Image (cartoon, rainbow, N blue to C red; front, side, top):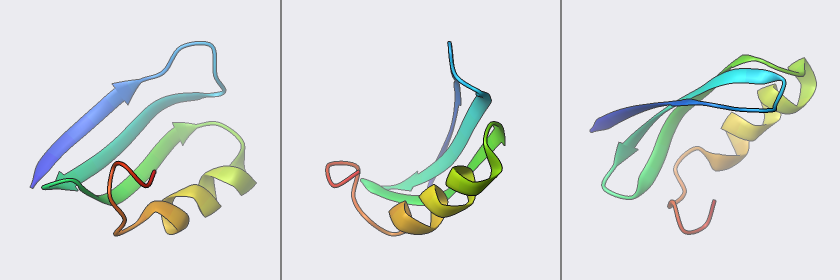
Length: 53
């Protein structure tokens, strides 16, 4: 499993953290940003492929 941290620009969140197992997304989390949307997005993308995201 590979871990990625993506530093965002021009958004409310400052960092997106996630793990990839092959091309399947796991453990997405956001640092900063709007609370409501950033709780839903990790649930919606958990376990689906990068292409689907």
